[in-house]
Length: 281
Image (cartoon, rainbow, N blue to C red):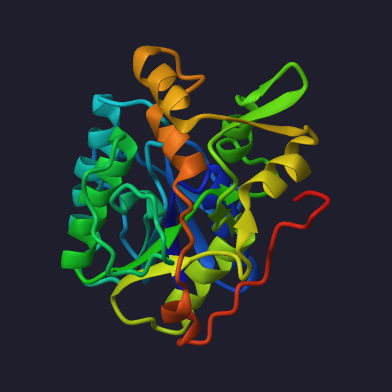
């Protein structure tokens, strides 16, 4: 197939583009910068529609990502850009990479299924990803919801975790909690499997096959001993501070205990291939 991969120059998009090419697809990378393989078609998701001529299917990963709130760039890319992409892709299968950040804020006493409410997100990223994926679901796309994607070259999870290290210790809000993570290879394989195997339209949680403990992950990745601080104190600091070092969104990510229920994808034969090892990624 001739597969367009949007956001192919980014962390997740480049992994998807490489895997699609390795499994025999002709890859067209749509974005402001060239991807790691295939043809490049320049597309500014915040400004115009992509050129999808001659394309058989689309895997959409282009997104504005981060902890900031109120930034109009998020809406321009994650909502308005989403609408332009869907209009250009009419009649073509679309695999839409969303995020578990679309789910309503926790804590989560039970594993989160795809029918968990969405809305009420505390960041512009979560709100606009939810709005964009709603358009994709209405258009009949397959929507994948990973959580905290990690792997070689990760520009998001590791820097966010690194912010909690001060004086050689990792200062974490509240007690240890369970959590799902998604290896970038797991996400890439899910994108390719959803396209190849013709997954039915709708949302799917995508995560590693194990449930992690937050403190174990931090110790393994950062190599620092863990110390706990009260959640209320961390939230107060995040609310009062204008710094991006500690945001309310970051506190939520570290304390909500989100574990994704992934049986929907498993029922279609998807078996995540990757997981975080105790000695690192």
